[in-house]
Amino acid sequence: MSVDDDPGPPSPPARLRVAVVGAGPAGIYTAEALTRQQEVPVAVDLIDRLPTPFGLVRHGIAPDHPKMRAIRDTLHRALDHPAVRFVGNVEIGRDLSCRDLHAAVDAVVYTYGAALDRQLAIPGEDLPGSLAATELVAWYTGHPDADRSTVETALARARSVVVVGVGNVALDVARVLARTPAELEPTDMPQHVLDTLAAAPVEAVTVLGRRGPVQATFTTQELRELGELAEADVLVDPADLELDGAAEERAATDRVVSRNLAVLREWAGHVPRPGRATVTLRFFSRPVRLLGEDRVTGVEVERTVVDQDGRASGTGETAVLPADLVVRSVGYRGGELPELPLDPHRGTVPNELGRVLRGGEPAPGEYVAGWIKRGPTGVVGTNKHDARETVATLLADVAAGVVRPGGGGADDLVAALRATGADPVLLEDWRAIDAAEVALGATRGRARTTLHEWETLLAAVKEAAARTR
Ligand SMILES: Cc1cc2nc3c(=O)[nH]c(=O)nc-3n(C[C@H](O)[C@H](O)[C@H](O)COP(=O)(O)OP(=O)(O)OC[C@H]3O[C@@H](n4cnc5c(N)ncnc54)[C@H](O)[C@@H]3O)c2cc1C
Image (tube, rainbow, N blue to C red; front, side, top):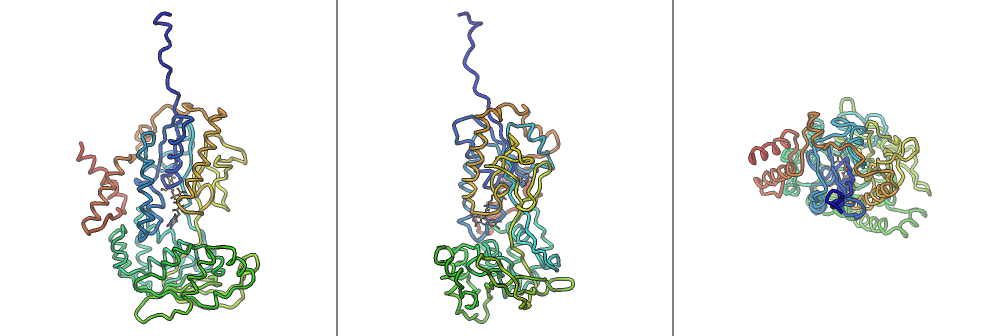
């Protein structure tokens, strides 16, 4: 055989180029599942509209839950993988269309979460002093898009607060509002958040559940924490804890429900102590209207009864609760990305095992994972299993030849983005932000303080780049 005939070493198999849209838990677990499989070599661009990764782990999980927030140290490992590139500060639908993104890679996995709040659909909902939990949580976690003036104006006069909803987010909000400045001091909340919360005159927080304690969706650990607040007493009306037959049966078969009831019963006899704030859990009460002329002054609630199937209906018996601040925490839903289908009722992208459905038909090369796939349920870890399912679907499409590695455009995505004027933030840039947050925290003896403004976040990147030039 002559040298000319020698085919040389075989060329390496083409890499499957995958863009993952959203660097929250679902996106990161998707990247991790892609790098852990052996079937096909991959190159993953993990895109986020923020210059920071971790999604709701950074801008959702309550800052007074440092152990839970520390999950980002585990998530970080996936970002460090050589086959994964974090591409922050790039919003799909604004900086690059879904169509152009799809054309640039072999497959796209959408993991952009469910960031919109569900509405109560009652009169007065839009009055000043009525906030969605999304707004308040974004503000206290230092999300750069948070509306500071709306939230801070509402908090300045928040003596009586009504939180609508009995899930974990509602309890997060109630707990954060009832904490003392000393309890919040070690957190990574931005300084203006700590100062505003310290100055807020909160005396009474009422958490409203439309149905009974048996139907509440909070977990026992979150519930129990309310009883450990330094300067607030938890109150529950013992009458709300009397169970009918169906509720009794549910409590006997559901361990979370029976544990929650045990905790609630410990509090049922509580009498508020003078000089302390109160957190009242009020069940069988649905808001029918927010009262007030130019801002919220109260909530009209109607007593409900719950039927055998757990459905609530009004009894016509109403009461007025004073409120200077109402926080609506009745769930999240996904928003629309231009060119991507969305089920408006569920607030999710229609899909089958993670494969996007367009007009009911599978759209090869387009996938979803996380909250935008299944809705806003479960804990951070739930997204791991969910992402694995989606990646298995994607790999099945590769094996079937429906998705071909190397089939997408050859351009480097980051170079293409820069050519259009976008300013992608890469992993080393995020490290500069991370270091700046740690340094800022250290000035007050804290482990970290969140940078909360776009300018400051991007300045940290530029300053680090200038230092290394
Ligand atoms: C207030 C709150 C508190 C919570 N507390 C806990 C807790 O204590 N423990 C727990 O286990 N779970 C908790 N959860 C649930 C947990 O946060 C979610 O399960 C998880 O974050 C969902 O992951 P995700 O990746 O689907 O969405 P997200 O975490 O929302 O991530 C989506 C990412 O997509 C990005 N994005 C959005 N649109 C675009 C776009 N157009 N282009 C590019 N990027 C985009 C966003 O910036 C974000 O980073 C909490 C949730 C909330 C809302």
